[in-house]
Image 1: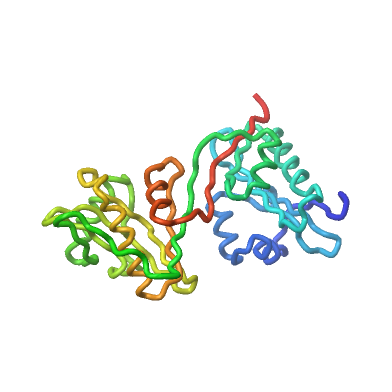
Image 2: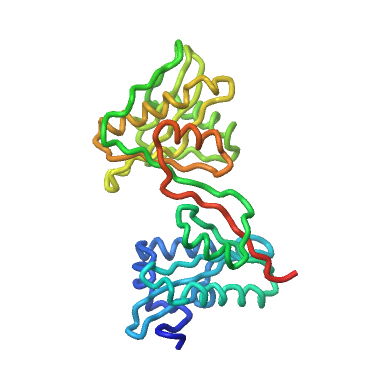
Length: 283
């Protein structure tokens, strides 16, 4: 026992409790661990109250050569109990003792100032930008888009546009696989200037969550800095508003400062913003 809780390795009987603590479906937890190659029987530690309820979780995964990744979650009601410190110390001890790792990395949401401060105070230093998610509220009708001369937008036609769109996406993101199945052509918007393909927005409607999502948005280089990306964003906002959605979300890289600036100017706000922090534990 450590105070009013104990630290124990995970076992399969606690899957439902872990899913509840992380606010995720059980299958999503299993898929996450599988994707990250987490072996929860040796890599996942739980903080458990005397009544058996969970009050914290920490798990490790091989993030890169010589670097372990840590995920740590303690509900705010248990802050001040020393649980985060105990779990973090355990993660650092395991990493020091591992022959295949010498540093620990954590992805931190910059909007969670308490957790960011906790890790920075323990010696974790910024190492790289990560990603952010932003949202536009549809509480009222969005502004109408203003298109440059001869520029317009239409919806995607799979028979005519699949090869064109796939090629354009791979020019910008090599290796990108266009999802030809389970897509709604009416939520894929192609921008043209006369007969020249300019760019696109690939969107997804998540009606069960009340939010639309922009999976990809791009403007080809010759047409950038002409206000077309702004017009395309406003077009997607208006489509989702007309369909009764409550908001529109998108994600981007922390290194894409121009996109973040545009989205902020258009009225979007951050839901989360993640950067990576490292701590060297041994030479």
